[in-house]
Amino acid sequence: MSVSPTAAKSLSVSIRGLAQSYGALQVLKELDLDIPDGEFLVLLGPSGCGKSTLLNCIAGLLEPTNGQVFIKGKNVTWEEPSKRGIGMVFQSYALYPQMTVERNMSFGLRVSGMNKVEIEQRVKRASEILQLEPLLQRKPMQLSGGQRQRVAIGRALVRDVDVFLFDEPLSNLDAKLRAELRVEIKRLHQRLGNTMIYVTHDQIEAMTLADRIAVMKGGTIQQLADPMTIYSKPINRYVAGFIGSPSMNFIKATLGGTIKAPTVEVSGQKLDVSDYAFAGMAPIGSAIEFGARPEHINILRGKDTKAKGVFDAVVELVEPMGSDTLVWLELGKQKISIRVESSQIMRPGEHVGVQFRVKQASLFDAQSGERL
Image (cartoon, rainbow, N blue to C red; front, side, top):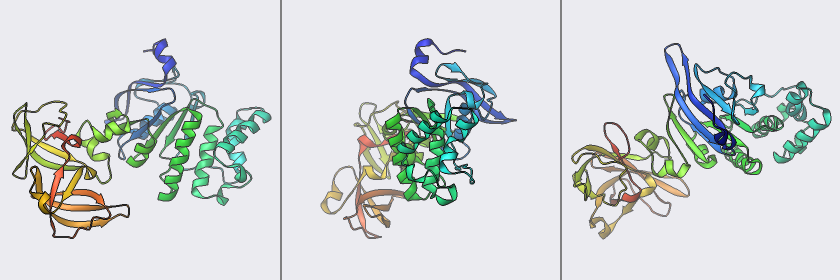
């Protein structure tokens, strides 16, 4: 199999029929994936979904059971990692403790026999981009976790490659450092314009960094789209539940009305969903799940609770979070969470009205989990 000349010019990485098995265990299942030049693609999913295995196959650290990997139009499936034109940043910093920052960054170039002047220029450029200039003569033990990870990124950066691979690089850092490094990595991508493939289980990292996100499960890509599409129109219940913090509310319901005027029956009440953009219609009377994100539900009080399409609910738990408040309610026999402004004071046991923003909701088939 080959990549067409036209595709080769626009695609940075192309994967065809990639599979990886360990005996009877199939980790990757015949994956196809095209990554354009300059894209920041995030592979997102829980542990064991195959995201790191896919990255390692692209890097050449694993030989796939089946399929092929192309980088810049060249079939590199059986090439050594050093010949693939990639730079890789690992979860562990993997720095040489006896070497200075400068020596750690230049080590690979020195081993390859590059001339001294070129090495110095590359290290200088990378250290300026990553703001490592004052740290070049320090050793890893004299650096913070965030500084060590920047050195690890710098070591990949000096290679001057087309594709950078990141394998959960921020997992070992605390929350504050993760947030800071996220910003730095995004700035780095904007400045360099190189293709970057980034593995994480953290959906916040995925949403903030990615041009596109590939949500993975069981060795397959469930959905591949830009962050807002995945957030607002998840292709199935799995993707909907994985993206968002806290997770989307899933409420058991029944599809009613007619095809032209559909309704959803929730807790004995009918909700008009004619404004909902159906991707595919289930038979009237089907069991479905009504999905609503906590920020897409309104809490009403007083006379507003008597309005049409408003459901009665009881406040169960209140979690103040500073900028906003997460309120847990009981709607019928189901628990839901709603995000409200911190100025709204809620009390456990209080009866309130709940109003769903139907245009921003998601409906899923109860059996298949696919988006309706």
